[in-house]
Amino acid sequence: METAIQDILEKREKTEKVLASVINLPVIPKVMFETIKLLDNKYTTASELNKIISKDQALLTKILTIANSPLYGLQRKVTTIEYAILVLGYSELKNIISALSIAEAFKNKTDKYLNSKEFMLHSYLTGTACKKLASDLGFNNTGEAFIAGFLHDIGISIHHRYLHSGFINMVELVESKGITYKEAELEVFGMTHEQTGYYLLDKWNFPKEISEPILLHHLPEDHNSCPVLGAIVNLADYIINRLKLSNAPWDKDIELSPFTISKFNLQRELDVERTVEGYREIFWEQIEFVRFLS
Picture (cartoon, rainbow, N blue to C red):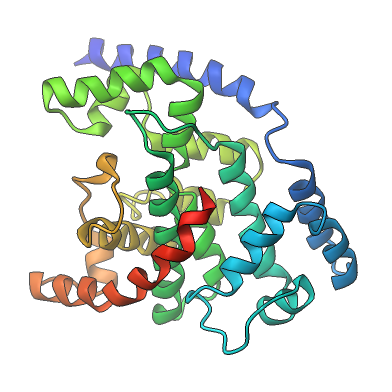
């Protein structure tokens, strides 16, 4: 047992050395970085934001498409950044752009080991589910819930892009030995994708309110400063997988944590089934709005 733990720690140390080089890469596109900086300044005008965002038509299109998605249920079509700011607010817009910037930075090419379109679909749908659940639960910051859900599996993308040979090895271990993704991740990398995501988000100074629920979205009650958001991500991830709205093989064995079950009163299987089915139509409406993101 002690030898196995030592082996995991040694592999984790090697993985972290690779991740240390990722931290210093200019991963966030310039326009996104400038936009986030402007949104941090309460004196920034809508005109200034529009001027910067309009330099990147792809970013502009994504923001407007998200603003017009069923996620917000707006009655009037959003056609300009100025109107997007009016109806969404600076904080919500910053959450959207932050999530998009991280996703863009770690966008992968599809191969037989990871389908980037399905990964993006799963990420966005989980973010959407988190936002809806947070709203239904009366959680104060639904924007934080969206970004935590959107980025909850960012470690998968990082493993695939920067530790690709290890990722291939991990997938082959799952297929040949019939072990779980978590077991394979620990055997290959010495750390899970949740730990990898947290490691980098922490180095990038993401608030703990977001990074810790990402680290502990399978066990939100485990030393988490924001266990409610962790439970929201746990349930959202479970719902998206249970409804089979996206292909996320790394989460096929996901379970609801005891804290999530208690928080959402899901003690009976019937309660779980009703909760899952209650969100089916909402998330199906989202799928067509997500395809363009990848």
